[in-house]
Amino acid sequence: MIKSMTAFGSAAFQQGDRRYVAEIRSVNHRYRDIVLRLPRNQQLLEEGLRAIISSRIHRGRIEASLQIERSSEAPPYDLELNLPLADAYLRIFRQLAEHAGLDQEMRLESLLQMKDVMAVRPDADDAEEAREGLHKALHGALDALDEMRCREGDAILKDFIERLDRLEVCVDAVHRRAPELNDECRRRLNEKISTLLNGVDVDPARLAQEVAFLAERSDITEEIVRARSHLKQFRDYMSLDEAVGRRLDFLIQEIHREVNTLGVKAADTAISQMAVEMKAELEKLREQVQNVE
Image: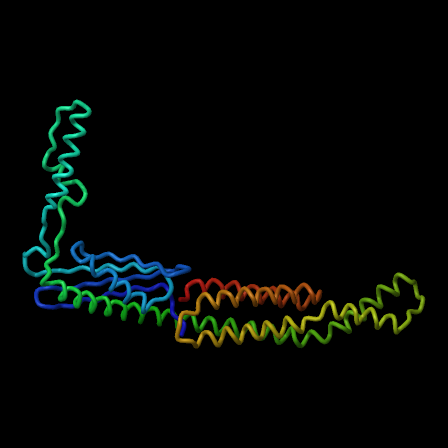
């Protein structure tokens, strides 16, 4: 199943006087990059929330924000002083002041700004309730996100199918044209030899030998077979229920390689024109694949 990497989802879960709100958005990224924003007193839940996101999104940059709203005025957390750390800061400050010969005092607001002197202590009784509420809100937001990703993916899938159909039409046309290359090669070679030799007869056996040599060099059967195989693989991957974006991107590179090779080897105007058309379709496919999970 094709899923887009660009989407947005949000959800809320009410439990008692608390409302848990989750918003999540995803954009294109080569790998999976999760940015998670949580209430300061719920940082211990980050690992579990990240695991939920990772289990449902395999590729893209994901930005998730979770909040807890309370209808009551009671603070959602308590503050506590780290007195041993504050004492250590004071000792270092006095030691530095004595060493430098400075007569300065440590102000209270300056001490409170020191790292970890004032700590946020979550309410232990509410930890399990918060975990449950945030998990439900996140699952709801991921459901909404996934719905949008699937809708976008359906539109991309339709575009893929149309472009693959055009590519296969071109490959079939190249395949039909390929047998005519030998006759064209024979005709061009005969004309050049006749011009150079000014009417002198040419040994038919030697001419056939030269034509066979040139035909072998310009044979594009292998490239046609591989291009068809890659196009079939592309269709097969589109039906898989997993992240396929990187594999599709790789296949596009391989198809482009085959198309470029057959255009060079064939040395034929008609095939060269079809190769240009195929490259244009492949470039449009590549642009779309960049948005696929």
